[in-house]
Image 1 (cartoon, one colour):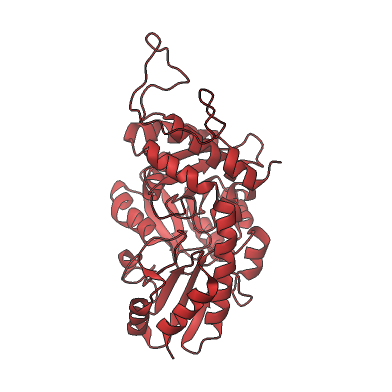
Image 2 (cartoon, rainbow, N blue to C red; image 1 turned 180 degrees about the vertical axis):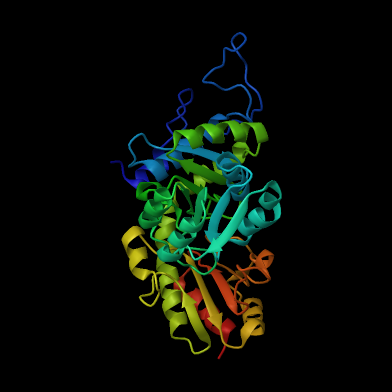
Length: 385
């Protein structure tokens, strides 16, 4: 099997046959000359349907998530992670269908279910996805079309046993979809563990430089792939060629970046775990994390996201975020620079008053690739005594 690092640099990215350029060109074109009616060159006719730069990105994503699968996988790039989720749910669900979602799902995912899809007759039920007994009980209580998992979850960093969850979902006739944004395909490959589809906000670790917005769905199911190809073309939420090129550029260094993200996050989590002003640290790399052993078994590393709770409640958490200097106050994650945020007021504000409401004393870190000692010093001064 070709190594991950090799696939990240070469899959879908052969040197340009015309010029020999080692980087795929940006095909900044909306339409393509046909050699007679229906006589397309390589199948390209209009860039909403297909674009060579986007094709290169999709071939790379399919290789990274599905390289070990018999028959491989199919990847579809989108204009954002939310566009990817929306298209997949339109394909897989119909009015009257029910979806199980995590009790600590990303706020944007919850908003999509609660404020958009609910109006179209698709219901959702929040459950602790990492608790197999509860999931099984809810699947036995009523049919579900999809079990939707994040692992690690956003923002509480819970980890789910993907293989066990896939077996459980399939036993009850449901599909398993895994949001793999926090882990990236470098740390975890859900399709190899039995998931039916993987979603990404490619804005995050795959792009890696906070300069592009995008999303992706990768699936091993021919039926889902056929539906995704049709629905994406029909609805048109595609990334432009430059966005596709930027994401592909970021993927080339994904492996080395993730190694540094993981190393820095581990050191920060260990520091926070001993800080007297911190009441709880959420990081699967700590032996105290309830899902630590599962994370060790299915992940190459524990990721660059760390959440923690502080004494003094919401006001201390908010003040802490304001005092940080090297950590930039901002939403999003997965870039080379470190970010800090208050989920209850920022990324997860849409969950307020719902079963997914996050603790108001919680701070979330996207740990970048700066010098770890500098990051630790910044957090220590921001947290205070």
